[in-house]
Image 1 (tube, rainbow over the protein chains, first blue to last red):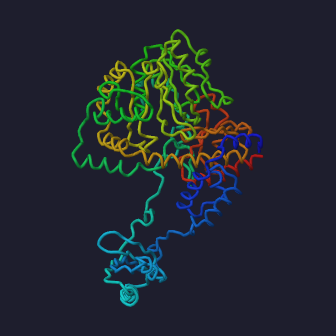
Image 2: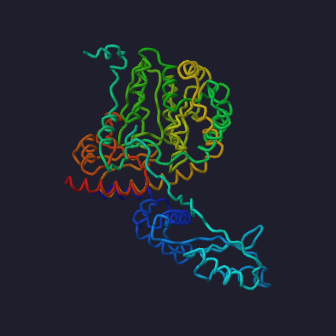
Image 3: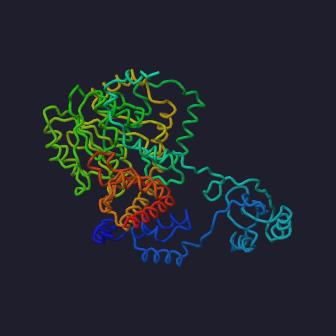
Length: 183
Length: 390
């Protein structure tokens, strides 16, 4: 390997100072897109050493900018898997002094609840629930969710098919349609 | 029975040398499990809003010819785009022509200005089409070999050395295919001085203008005194990932654009209407997509340059386009041998540098318009290939 060449190249690739925030954002975007991206590859892409990149990722984890690494799974490809998702519109009366936050917490602590959002418009909280069967979700809604203090009403919508989730298109045809060599 | 058909062919075509890319395409196409870094186009699909706008135009019944020069609204948008991005001022009425890809614009430009025997300077390594199109237009291509020690940047004195009384024009391409080299403002200004001194016309292929990663792009036509003697060639293929739409444009002095339009109206009528409607959307709402693709290209460029350097191949950091052009001289192989053996042993396709001109010998063109996953695997295979050579 021509070490001399590498040093010159790196000197050109590295920009001096002041770019750290930009690099942090780049790392976050890269990892958001692919949580399994190897540190070595990230380092090469953003022109940092592997050690610097590791440090940077660790810092982002410590600061809570990176909360975790998950995998997008198309469960409909798994024949043995049975599962149902429901989106539930919840109307509530906010608790004095605590607003919606306390109520939201009482909901998101349930492991069945996968997402909770405070919404503008016709209802207050949007709650996403996963269960094995429709029965299981119905029971959860009627026994746990609608019986909470301050919950006025619930409307449950079952998901029939997932087309796109968190920016990922399910059943996307990503074949390369280009000819193999072109000028 | 003897096939007589070849006797009908014109000398022009018979004498045209076949593209070196063709042979390589045949080789690579015949193999399975090939990772190709030999593709000269984006790996992204055209942004959805552009596709959707084209659908919409079809639904609305826009299926007829447009004006020869292209939809007026599109020329107006190109005018605004060139003005905002590159401080160029071309009138949509008579200084902009919408073409079937930048390729047709190059063809029209040369056919409009070349008299039989006129010399046109082609700066190599270069896109494979320039010299053949010069020949087809009746001109004589004169090549300048740029030097790897200058990062393949054209030097003004090289132009002076190539000039004869017959020299009419020079074809420039920055950012460059295949080297990725970008000429900065200062370098362009020096070239402009020579071009003015010898009263040459510049045909400036700026199809990769949007894809520069380190410094903002400078258009050659924006150099002092150059607008009057430059035909600017650009298009939608590379920036907006629209290669298959075949849509480009030329901008230049009205006399030349009007001559080009004259040929275009007889030979082509007009560029595809649905593609023009897509392009209109690309220029109106496409910048965000361009930025996103650009970020990705930049990251992948860095990745590939680091990976190639790590495996011991020398390569300069290319400032634009989506190609790196590493030297393979250390391996002792020719470009063709390297590319062919790499393909056969590791199923990675790259383009041998010599197909872009003699000065490309000893180099290969690797496109980084591929997913990081593909690039990563390709680099691993190349590393193995090089290790096995020792």
